[in-house]
Image 1 (cartoon, rainbow, N blue to C red):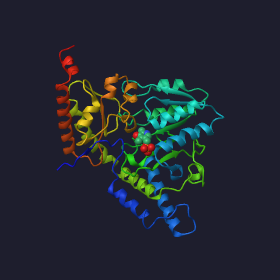
Image 2 (cartoon, rainbow, N blue to C red):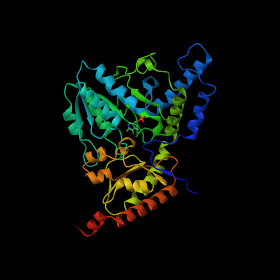
Image 3 (cartoon, helix red, strand yellow):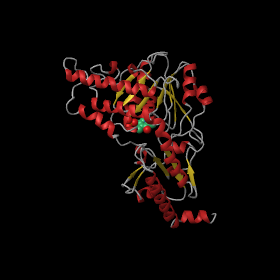
Image 4 (cartoon, helix red, strand yellow):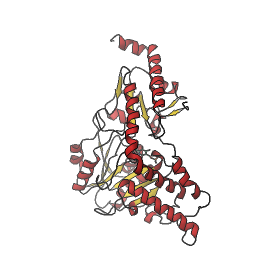
Length: 395
Ligand SMILES: *Cc1c(COP(=O)(O)O)cnc(C)c1O
């Protein structure tokens, strides 16, 4: 039996894995110490839990535990990374290179710094959503202190050539910050092989709790230094003060451990579900697969539909199928997706996108139901659409 609504919005957030929840529970009830309390067992137990989780997190991304700074999520980590570099390296320059399709956490942080005097280069993307490596290298000046390019896009799942970007950054001695929030836990991410200096990610995108994330901060070649953005008790080696969210961090660690162990078998299962969904919906006429031909995450599909009103379509089956038209932040505003616009889509196609992310708990029966339901809804809407009628008559 199907359970409704079917959840296909795993790029917005995921369910907490029961194994993660189980790991977290004792830190709410019996083991509730403050990880910074040094004078009694409550504190020692909490600190041990945080230390263990830090290992688990570091292991998933090929880092060492001293390089992991816990935050409240990827947005906070983006602010710490970008503002932290901008302030710390002010003596070396004020130029930041980023990309127009970044998540708002990065875009808005860069806009904030632009107002404060930073010079920001906004790299465009091609129709597949990819930046040009030549344009990236050409944009570097002696003033460049930071390159901030994401690993994989949250709307399209398109994966940037991260290793090549890391290589270019290293060659020019520029710090490379990567928003890997959608990639971590889904595909292998290794900060050493990818030559990443700063990397942000978030537990709730891979079956951990909301409100916990991390910033990876490289410790050698080069040692990256950051100006703290939250001052206080000097937690997280002074980079992020505030009492640690011990249950959340324990869950984050467990979520990382599960991904380390299961990603290799989970990714092909997810991509089989995703491919079925994608192929099913591509049977419809006048649809466009966004990011077609580019490397993409295994679980994400983004399709634009011509000649109908996307928001009306999504609302017509919202009680049965939970999906979104773009990112959770922009879909509320009814604006066309800036990510899809940057990929050259017209206003109609950029508005009428269906973004679907399958997840650990998605079943093939749910995918079959989804294909059927969306197909029927599209055909029904188009049957009464004058624009569709005109298109069919070649006007
Ligand atoms: C979800 C997401 C974020 C924000 O993460 P939070 O932990 O919710 O702040 C940033 N970047 C990308 C690519 C995301 O998908």
